[in-house]
Length: 100
Image 1: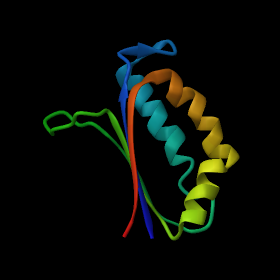
Image 2: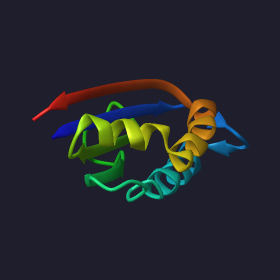
Image 3: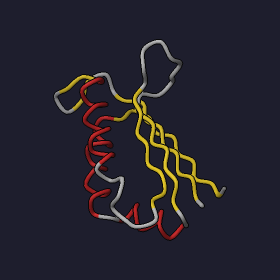
Image 4: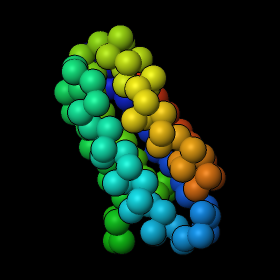
């Protein structure tokens, strides 16, 4: 199993919207990728919540049955379509993939 974790810090204002609106839109777009290929075992998108510690605005926690499944997810047209929006609204990105 491969775990894929990505965190994004968003710009204060981008694409005509503020950070909160862009975070909500980003969550919606990412959640549309939850079942795009067979072998996605877990797929959670969360936003920073008031009162809880967070140094990033959006996090994706996902699990894939294999590296091949992760690669298929990454190359899928639905996932590719999300990248331009994320690239426009993010200021920082951190990612880690690891086998469990």
